[in-house]
Length: 241
Length: 134
Image 1 (cartoon, chains in turn blue, brown):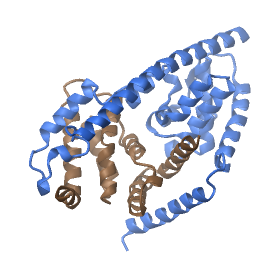
Image 2: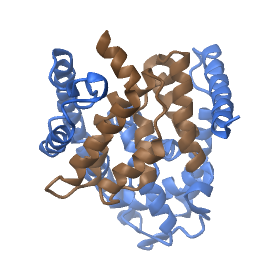
Image 3: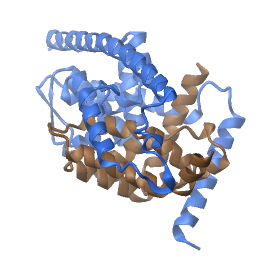
Image 4: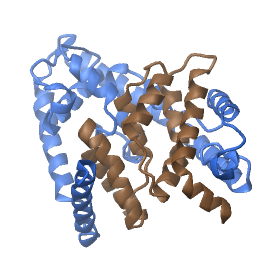
């Protein structure tokens, strides 16, 4: 049997088992796994908090990383929290080259997001901010060292709507590249990512534009809240030192 | 109906042409490409990924990622693109059994190549379910 198929079958069984487990436990507020992750994160936040010192540099070499793929969930959470705290306290981060790669190249590090969420909760941030963090998976790209929410938006394209001129230009070029006669006599307007001419697609675009406008408005509020929060934390750290 | 049948029969070629088109668009973008723009293109491709799934077309996620990364002059790492593509795939709870099987095979490619794909997606789905329930 094709090894890919065997692998796919094994994966599928595990996957279906997971889904079945979910469907039978539907209604429970949170999975025990999630609870344990959050609990562990909170405990680590405390220990990391205590380890912070007043120098202007945080050395992360203690957080042994075994490369992107080898890092454990616990290590990722520790690094995520440490970076968040270091950033909040206006410190530089040293000896963590793998961490940079981890934060920039890995997508959907929900364990780090959990750590961020925990951090924000522990610092009494607003419910709106917490909700946005939980609602927006793109925040999982969050790189505290970048220092600005706009950097996150820049990386994930969060602020790019479907009618953004740059995206439109790429789409126009893509459309110009695609021949008008496609296999099976399919019209290029039927290609899902390019078929933008019929009424249904226009409705989708309009909805996306509305959502984008709402998202932009929300992001503006978050940026303000985050910056205000960081400034407050930096001031508090200075005062404590 | 006829068009739908043609689409199903030629989905692999059509999907490939569509990806080629977007890669051409990225390559020939006159301005400076930036990561957000690459991710925005991947988001644009979400309906195509969905159609591929609906027609049980198991496209090569790794190859698509490589092509997009190359088109963007490797500004965004192939691995990041792989995960970004996975993030566009629908929640399995809204797919039928065939769709779920196709989805599993797409995820498995990334799992085999980079690891961690399934764990992250399961957490994402759990999050989405939690959000739906709230």
